[in-house]
Length: 377
Ligand SMILES: [Zn+2]
Image (cartoon, protein in one colour):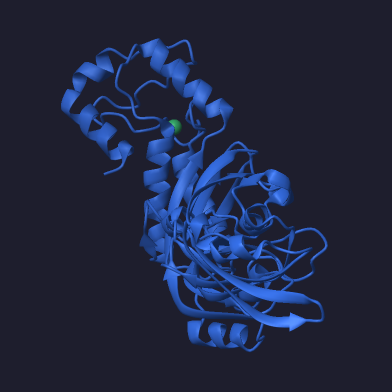
C-alpha cells in the first residue's frame, strides 16, 4: 500500500472531523477541501505541487524512464534502489514534522525507495536484492538525476607464479603483475573499469610461487557479469607465467576471508656464503628451529609498519647442491608461519632479524633464488 492510499483511508475514517478542522500551517496555505464527502486527497490537487516533495510521486514514471534507460547498458540479475533526497526536501519535511509535533514519521526517503522500487520493478522485472544487488539504482534528487552504482564482480581461485620478476600487484616500474595477468581476460569479457587482486599473502617479486595461493579477483563496474570460467582459466594459463585453478564465483565477503587467511609456508632458497661459513656451526643449523624476532625488513617498509614480530621457524633442511668455482651453493628449505620473512631469516637483514643463518654460521649470505614451494592451505 502506498502512503497516498493510507492517507486516503485515514481521512475516510476520520471523515467529517478532518474537514471541520482544516489545519492552517506556517508552511503555506493548505488548499480547502474541495468536497466534504471526498475525504480529501493524498496530495494537494494537481495544480498545486506538494510543499515537501514537489509532488515527486506523481512524476515517478519520469524517474523510472531514466533509470530504465541507464540500466540498458548493463547486464545484471538483481537490483536495489536508494534515494538521496537532497537538502531541500529533508529541510522541508523536518520543518513539517516540527510544526505539527509528530513523533513517529516515515521519512520521504523510505517512501520514495519503496514506491520507486516498486515502479522500477514493474518495468524491468529483475530480482530485488536489498543486501547484495548487482546494481544499486540511486535516485539523486539533489542533482536531479538517476545514478547507478555498479557493484563489482568477484571471482575466487588459486594461482601459481611460474616465473620470477613479476610483482603480485601494481608496483613501481614493473609493467606486468600477477594481478594484470589474471584480470586481463576478465576485463575483456566483462568490460570492467578496473580490477584488484586480494590474495592470501604475497611472494617476493623475484620469487616464484610453486604452490596454489588463494585469491579473490575483483572487477570494478563491469558491463557484463558472466564469463566462462573455463575459458578465463585457459587464457591465463596460456601465458605460462601465472597458472590458476578452481575459479568460482565469489562475493565481497570472500575478500576479507582470503586476506585473513594465515597459512604456514615452505620456502626453498639457493644461497652462497661470502667468506667461509663455520662448518661445525653449519652442521648444527637445525638449532635455529624455533621462535625468531624480525624487525620489518627495510625493503617492505614502504607498505608495512616498522614493528618487531615474533615468527616461528618450524622446520629447516639444508644441503650442498653444487660447487661453483671456489664457492659452494647450498639449498635451504624452511617451513615458517604466515608472515615469516624467509630471505631475512637467512641473511639477517643487518641484524634486524635475530637469530639468522648468516649470524649463526658467522658469514654473510647471498640469496641467489627464492621460491615458495608449499602453502599449507
Ligand atoms: Zn509530497
